[in-house]
Amino acid sequence: MSRVDRVSKNQVSTLHVVIRSASMECGLSVAEAGEQVRWCPESLLSAPLTHLDGVHEVCQQWVELFRRLQGQGLMPPVTQIRVRVADRCLALLGVPWSHSLKGAASALMQVRQRMLEAGFTLAEDDVLRLDDAPFGMPRLAIAYPATLLAACYGMAEQLQARLESLLPFAVAGWQALPFLGIRNARALLILDEGQVSVARTGTAQTTRLGDVSVRPVGHQATAAGLTQVWQRLSLRESWLADLTTVPVLDLRSGGASACLPQAFVLLPLPEQGGAESLSPALRLAGSLPSIEGGALDAVFSQVRYGIWFRLALLGMGLVAAGA
Image (tube, rainbow, N blue to C red; front, side):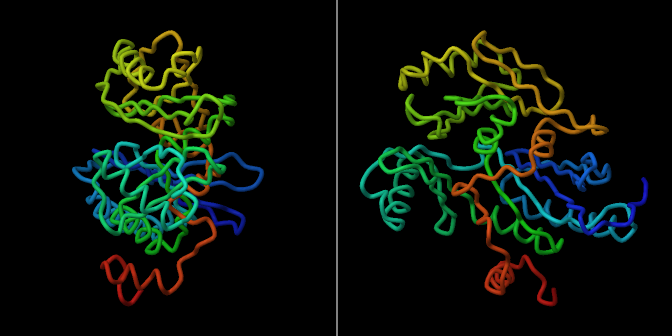
């Protein structure tokens, strides 16, 4: 362990948190103008997760550890927190255009109803986000569990940091494509632990992300398994069969190599100097820290925690009364 140098006022320390259905991981990247991003090795952590409700407990354990490390001068203060969540942990659904989408209240009512009809389980206080697609276009909707948001906001509050962004893998991956050299994509495959997410446009005439499907493929993600998933989706959305190239992001940990069908192209993740132990998900998050999902982001970009949100967290037991 090495002690942290004096913290510059221009330094931004970003805690990247990755949440999957069975595990969580995090890492702190430190950026300063004119210098290469570096990672705090003591911050690279992982923890098992049996249920999404367990995110709060893991966050509390990490907060206690980070406070000790900061007290020992081994870790700088956290400036902001950015969270990425596996698609299978959330409800993501493409919603066809209808006139009820014109009004905010009626749009959210329709989205909730369609998600319930699609088999998703929603709590009354879950937060719904709907993209800002042009008039007449299909919309992508996401439901964020209230317990997940409360855990992440509570962690940020306790670390005196901003919760800057919270997005599913599919949205963050789609936003990252131009930075990875892919423009005007119509589809994107994201490999995660035993699952594949197929993010795609709502129609062949647009490049806006319009729908996301999550399918099991096993941890090996064989070419035959991926081909079967693709062919089944192509039966419902015939325009997918006309795509000659489909980019793939492999965010699985453990060094497994993807066996891809011929039309699928694995995207190389940006190099992270001096951080060879980073997982693929942290490498992607750390190299593209400014990506935000706009209207689909669970965090309103201009909102900072006022007294009303502190009271809400207090009511859920996530902030100490004397904090």
